[in-house]
Image (cartoon, rainbow, N blue to C red; front, side, top):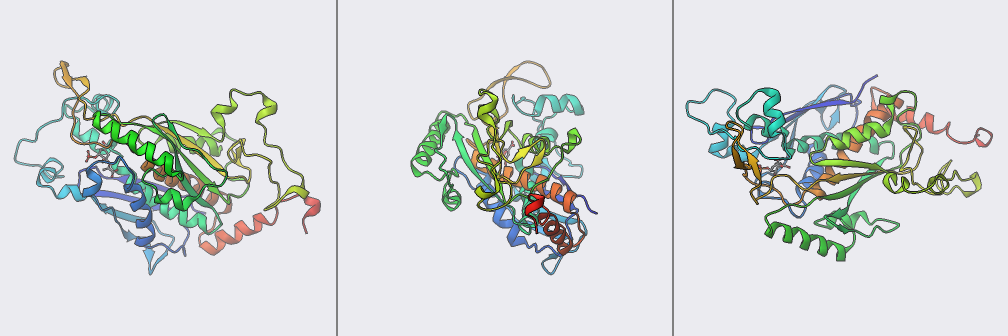
Length: 393
Ligand code: EPS
């Protein structure tokens, strides 16, 4: 049985970024076009900086897929950094020795990897640290997420995201979210009025040479019972999701279901009542509400998974922040090259990828299978066992 896992490599302004994905069953339809559809979504979003006009993200499949189908072997993806074509970057990020002096970055940016990274890895130049800690790497995570998502789709799981807040502006969340409207929105909200307010807020922040954060929400529907487990701390799915979300650049908080709101209530107000069979509309064991966000005791409970990620405003801002020089320890202003004013919409797309990766890993753990048909067969056999014993035929 295979375990879904992946690694990425590459720097923001190096030649490109790579990933190797292992554990995908054979027979899954994957094409560069399928992956590109998600890459394009990550690049959009109001408030992105100049860099996204330079990059046209495309993942070339260089291994593991033949004639549009996975082979069960590791899948390798290669993505070019268009910005590297700039002569400056070719010298600054050359993998071989260069015969000219390359200017060091020594003005530490607060809120980034600069200080801790240089101290930990022993550099007197921030460049080798900032290049890898850059959110450019999330382009590969989204590509890997596309593969995970394609696998999940085979067992009926779909994943969406939308933006809940930009700064202090809250979106109104309707009972049924119009995902097509979200996809058409520059800030990934379904409400046009709020969209205009949010965009105005981003403009305002840009004029003030600042940045703004916010909260995005990712939802997975069609999730079967029993992904994750209660039996050991590291098998709990909510813990795995929290780790995956907190690994997204600038995400500083994670909430599953009504986590924070529930903390202010009493026990009788926060339960999701398990409905009796005559009230079920779509499947066995429905709940009256979904305050738990689809996970109880580290396992999926059949309801929609709802996860939120809170993003701090991007730390690199055009308004030069007071800081310190890495070499001298003297007072200085922080390094600034370029930045985005707001990345909350893009972070939602990255959150979808991370949730897809966690769920694909858990689904493969539960259902296994080296070929897609085996995976789907195992899923279907399990689904047939779900429900009250005396009502099952
Ligand atoms: C990033 C800084 C910006 C972002 C980049 C992440 O890049 P640059 O310094 O080249 O302007 O645009 O994000 C991406 C390149 C991307 O594809 O998302 C950072 O410091 O993390």
